[in-house]
Length: 251
Image (cartoon, rainbow, N blue to C red; front, top):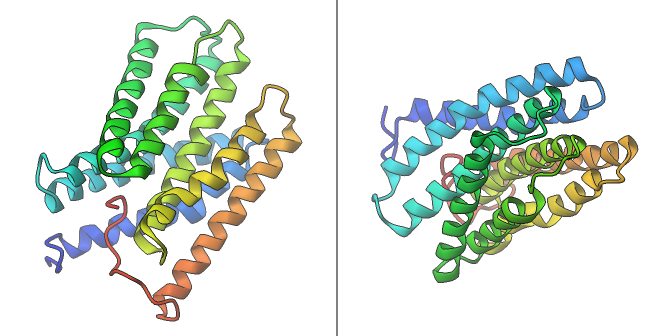
């Protein structure tokens, strides 16, 4: 059945259920198991595999709901790609860490260049029309140009993995906020980053201990649970919405 937004109801429902499952089940379990390699690896693989259909269905919605070449189409395309791309960067980093592949391959240079290019596009679009896009683009440029510089220290790859996966989790929370929260537009887009960035920095400083990481993970879990409670309460009608719920990853 085609809904009022012109999208198949079944696909929209599947997309939403996958997004909720990632945000409130799979990602939290992967994060909370960070100190148990076997359990963490299993949930982390599930996170990657389930993020792929979430991203692809969101991509389909972007093309179906917005005119190709429009600002919103381009913004959603770049923003959602950046969020999903963080997962791929994180997986590449942990692969290199496990294989002690400190020297970057051509693939690594290409992935870093793509990160910079997409981030620069967001900065350009944000400077014209959309401040949150400028912020996310600037963060992406900071990662690509400064934070992810190649070093001979193999531990830097592990820290890169942590940063990317935590950042991708906050991307998912950002999408949920955009769709569900009753707040000014810029606040809906930016509050997860304002909370997430300090926690990510705290957890992944060069001198960080496992205890610091555990505190940051627990705080991230608590934030996700608060988001989940808000969405559940809003679904009952107790929290008025400014706009009807849209498919995840549309903004």
